[in-house]
Structures are given as structure tokens and as C-alpha cells.
Length: 149
Image 1 (spheres, one colour):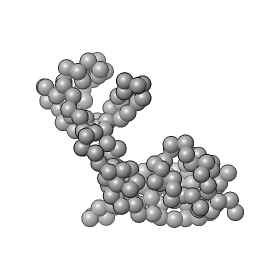
Image 2 (cartoon, rainbow, N blue to C red):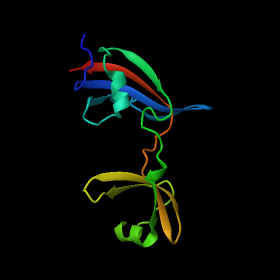
Image 3 (tube, helix red, strand yellow):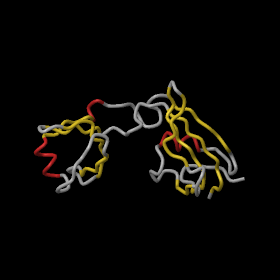
Image 4 (cartoon, rainbow, N blue to C red):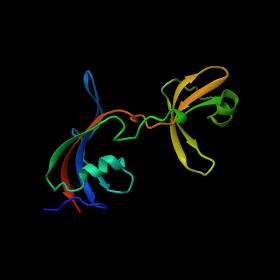
């Protein structure tokens, strides 16, 4: 049987859930639809999740619990930025209304794209959280490996 290694192309079903005191909160799942096909190392999954797949064989089923911050890193308070409303509006889509919880894409001076979540806004400023939405949270990653190339 084929075994997943770094760089493998794999087809799998997976489920990712946040773990909390009140149980699991599912974030994403392919279990009721078509499976995912991806290449390890290409950035489709967080590196910590990819590491859990290495060594699994075709047909394997597994579930991994990752503690707070292990899957998507710890929350970094420096990644929560308050932007002057005038500066934010200058780069925002004309006429768009942004609400708390909206996910926006920003371009860095180097040309990279980063996502940020609107955490707060008023007439003077907009607070954006550039942390991964699952940063600092414990998660359960469950998989069923269908194929390995």
C-alpha cells in the first residue's frame, strides 16, 4: 500500500473541528461531499496538519487532537491592528459597508495578500485581527485517506 510522504499527492476526506468545554464545533468537512485532493507541502493545509498525515497508508482512518496553538499557531496580540478610519476607507471598496466579523483581504507593501477580520469599528478607526481565525484554539483533525500518489 502507498504511504503518505512529504510531497505526496493525496485524496482524502477530512473534518476539522474546534474543541471546547461544550464539545466540538465543526469548521470544515468533506465527509458529505466530494473528497479533497491536494499535495503535501503546497500550502493546502497547515503544516501541523500535514505532519499528522505523513506515514498514513492508503485506506487509513485517523483522528488527531492538537492542543491550543499547535495547529494554527498561538494568537499574537501584535497582529490586531487599529487602522485610522480615513486610511481604511481610502483602501476599501467604494460604497462597501463592513461589519464586525467580516473577513477582508489586504495587500502588503511587498505585494502579498493577507486576510484580516474586522473586530471593531467606529467613526475614527477600524480594528483588524490578522491572526488566523483558528490561532490559539485546540482542534480535532480527522481523516480517511482514499488515495496516495
